[in-house]
Length: 129
Image 1 (cartoon, rainbow, N blue to C red):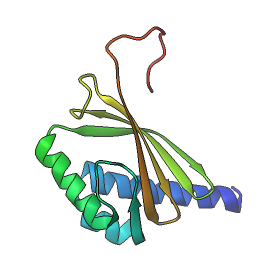
Image 2 (image 1 turned 135 degrees about the vertical axis):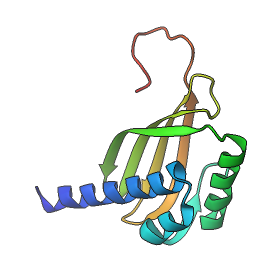
Image 3 (image 1 turned 180 degrees about the vertical axis):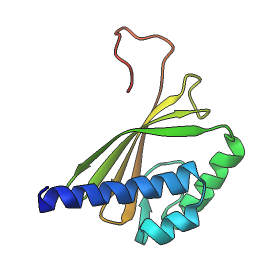
């Protein structure tokens, strides 16, 4: 494995660890301590900026969508960016939601959401995953 591939695998592990600990386990403080950078820039319109914004967003999800469950389907890395392709149920869409999270750097310092409700029918036989 090349040095570049080792770096990509390491940042993928960091981002997956952060995501699983913060969003799936609801343990944002441990996620920040283990995987967070010095600051956190939030791009999703559902959360305020910074780590406090993330803490409050995870609390809001737990309160308003207590049956939300997520599964990471794919992990992609390119340079300092990691993309997570996730399937969530119990959130916005009745059939679940396809969510891509884009995170940056060796420590988690920035976040974007791309969320799409899974429709009941499709004009093709391909799944969202």
